Length: 155
Image (cartoon, rainbow, N blue to C red; front, side, top):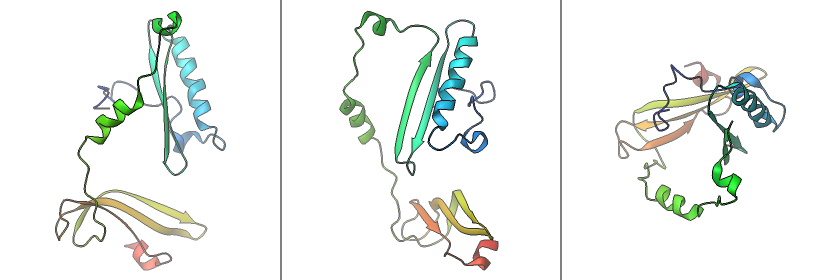
C-alpha cells in the first residue's frame, strides 16, 4: 500500500475477498478477480483503474494486469510499445539484497509463519524471521518444526 500510495483504511484492497475467502476452482481464481474488477470498473463514475495480481506454482510465477474503464490513447492510436524488461530488471537487481542465514543460530524475531494442517491437526510449522543475535545477527532466516513432533507444535 505504501509503495502505491493507497490508504487501506479508505480503499478496499480486494474485489473478491482474497484467495483464502473466495476459493476459486483450480487455477481459475484470477479469472474471477478479472470479472469482479470489470464489474467494479463498469459501475464506477469517472475514470477508474484496477490492479489485478496473481501468483502461480509455489509463489514462483507472478503476473499482474492494470485495467481501466477508459481507452488508453497509445493503444487506440496503435503506438503503445512494451518497455524492454531488462531496464526494469536492472533497477530491481541494483536494490540491496537481504542476507539470509544458511545455518541460523540464536534468538530471532518471527516475522511470519505458516501452519500446515493434516487430518489429525497441525503437522508442520514454517517460520520466517530475522536473527537478533549470534553470528548472523540481522540476517533473515527460514526454519521449520520437525515433521510429526507434536510436542513442538503445541509450544
